[in-house]
Image (cartoon, rainbow, N blue to C red; front, side):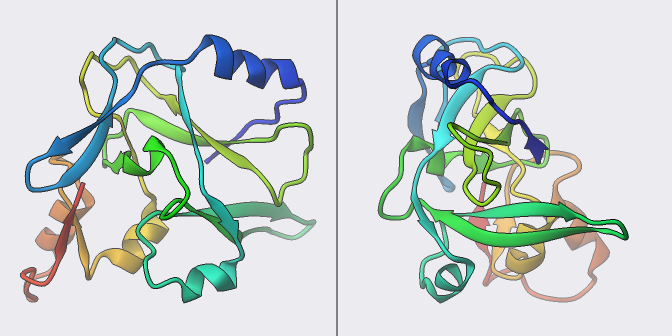
Length: 187
């Protein structure tokens, strides 16, 4: 994930006020919901912020429904090594916005970016989505959920992005045994 420190409040205010793009939730037959924009988007366009309840890592582990959890990780660098640590999560299950319907893709057109507003406290980043390439009108907006997500969920979820390098497609090629009939479809 890319780290961006926004030192000036007016910079983020500019993103929210002037760079607001219309985004729509839409049904995808056999998959659930997705998000798209009716207008063409250029690379680097701010899409929206991931909104939800900020909870501790232990609270996240106790949640029965982890569908809309977004892990907040920090990288601590000391003199000998670099460590990644999950410090909490944003849970958009009960309190969220349209961003919780942005699906995963192995060839994404968006990226989540940690941003900091009015502080540089690494424990409380906000997550903003930006396009990583030009996006056509009504093209689904997607980001890659990450290897750690798929390591945990690969037994119960299946990515259906359809990309040639799709993690679900590659994992089925690697394994000769096992049934996928109990795997839930996720796009």
